[in-house]
Length: 120
Image (cartoon, rainbow, N blue to C red; front, top):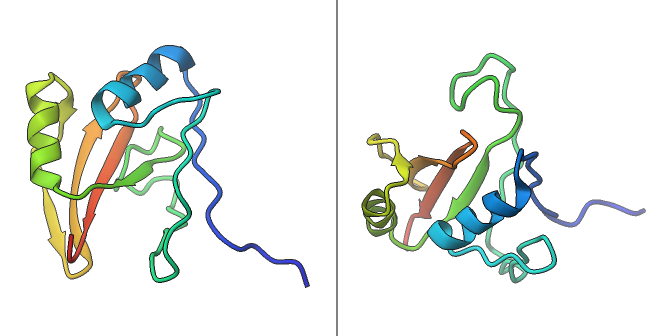
């Protein structure tokens, strides 16, 4: 039987897709070739989370239809660099047994979650 085998991507609507892609490249290091960023296939033990939130859940802005979660290797260093670059960074940082989290806002107002998995 055919089945889903993994995570395929995240797609965001943008008022200016070219400028937004440039921002993600400049500040988060996501190269954008042919209109998309491709990542290597994850190792077999890695996880990619696909979750659903109630429309009114405030974990990310209710008016925002989706939120991107990007893994980082050093949360504090990435967030500190982004602050220096003038990126809007939420001062809150949270720690759980599965990793640490921080958030930034892109130029179009999308909240982006950064995750440093435990052990990184």
